[in-house]
Structure formats: C-alpha cells, structure tokens
Amino acid sequence: MSRRTARKQAFFILYQSDVTGRPAGELLGRWRAYRGELEEYAERVVRGVERERERLDAALDEVSAGWPVWRMSAVDRTILRLALYEMLHVEDVPPEVAINEAVELAKGFSGEEAPSFVGGVLRGAEDRIFGKVGDGEPG
Image (tube, rainbow, N blue to C red; front, side, top):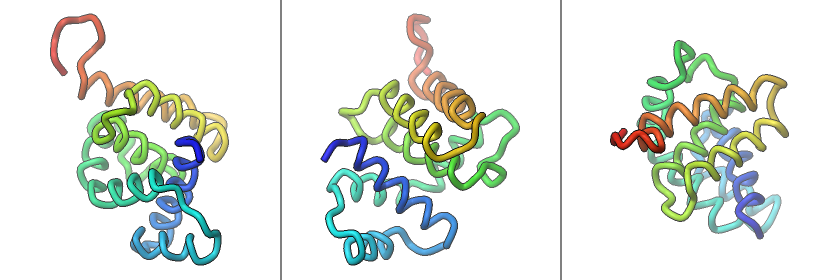
C-alpha cells in the first residue's frame, strides 16, 4: 500500500475517534475486524496522533489565527493533527509533503474553503516550527 492510502486509513480512524470519543486503539481493532488489512504506517500515525494530541492541538491553536481547534470542523481538525504529527515526528516525510497530502485530504473530505484553510494553518506551523526558508533565522 502507499503512504497516501495509509494516511486515508489513519484519517478515517482518527476522525471516528474524534467524533465518537472512543480511543483510537480500540478503533484500530475494529478496523481490522471489519475491513481487514491496515497499513503499518496508518497505525503508527494513529497511535502517534493519539499520544501527542494535546501538544498538536496547542501548536495548532497558536498558528490558526483566532480559530481555536475546538471551533474547527472535526474533519479539518483531524487532517491538521495528522499532518502536523507527520511534520514533527516522521523524519522521512518533508513538511511540504505533509502539507500537500493534507490539502488533498481536505479537497476530498471537507468543504470548499478547507484546502486553503488547512494549507494556510500548516504553512504557518511550518514557518513557526522550522523557520522561514531562506531567512537564515531558526524558527
């Protein structure tokens, strides 16, 4: 399976966890029981997002310019958490790839304005965390 497919699997599980309040670990088991195979990368991301959720939300609150995480749609919030986790914790996924993949998820699963919103928030996070490219200053 591709990482894109694994991201979709992770998105579905994390979204369900967010809207139902059920632990993601429980939902991983249900996925396997009803759908079968789950990509290893999907499980890695799901467990990581669940473990780092409070920190991810705090970082997203800082960069989302007056739009706190709790006010975001569950779809957008889930996409942002997943992408920010990849940006911070998955060494072989460059931030720009995580951002582009998040924008693609937003195009497929959220509203018309979501791709711009998701991309903007994540680019703000990238600037804050990694520093602006070419300015010589750390973030």
